[in-house]
Image (cartoon, rainbow, N blue to C red; front, side, top):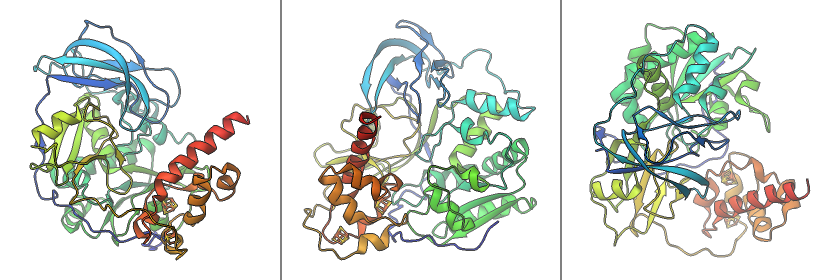
Length: 438
Ligand code: SF4
Ligand code: SF4
């Protein structure tokens, strides 16, 4: 399957800024209050299954829905539900959230035990019960991704590329829990009858590469592949292309071309659930940026407020100008320190003037660099023009929905055009226009 392409079309070379990569992960203290939104994934919002005043345990289901694309949401703490309210998440999504006053005991839900994964159906059911959604940031429910129906994938691709600057949580997961990751890969291969797995990393992580190579050397089904470092190689479609030379069709899925892709931290979380029965209630999070003193990776329970993380990491409110949820290329600016951390958050970057490029946007000089950088073969300058002019038919014609919002075009643009922001706006306009026109 591997075609040795090893290089995506377009893309850019970025400074790595992975200053937290050699700092061991620290357990973040359980906060006094957590707030757990019912929308933490792509798909339907969960319905609240607890009431104000209830005592809840770690691992207890707080919300779920019958709707197909969704995943249950569990309590990350033990304590008392003090409020059920509406919230706007860091990414602008509206949700109901459950506020819990923690008792600090982290009492596990009585009766939690290893799930029955004897058959493929039981395994997929267990994946759903774990609450696992794509931990690389996409937030797609894992049980849907792994349910390939009658198709047997040719290969599982484990995405350990982590190509955004600053973010090192996947790298730390490999260094600290590589053995469990490899066991997770084997488990998925067995349960889904997949014959081959490729764990892909970029060549700026030689230690992780060597460790994984050592761990898989007895298993011919698993290959560790080192790719040249290039952004946005960690984007699913890019990674598939880099490894196989195959392109996922427009509106298609990786399984359409014979592969399933999972983020490396998702594989780890799945393995841990199958070993313990404790659902997804916390994750490794990179905290970085010049706004905080104590940069590093932390195991944080979901629902922890950004402000608690910022203050624990000795953040400076005066200096910090921007809180990025995710990396500098694809991350979203949080509106408020009061937002809680959710499953999709792999990093919080507290950016100061030092970190940010404040050059003002100027007129496009039609240099064409954005076109060369676009891994999706789009015309960013043209899309920018039509997005700003709100011309939805033209946006459709120039395939704006194919934009993966990687930011490579913005990065190379000498005029500092705010291209990605305009594409997000353009996509929203196009979606609304489609709804309006039926
Ligand atoms: S890179 Fe910037 S200045 Fe150059 S064509 Fe694209 S939008 Fe215009
Ligand atoms: S147009 Fe979209 S996909 Fe292309 S480089 Fe810009 S952000 Fe990335």
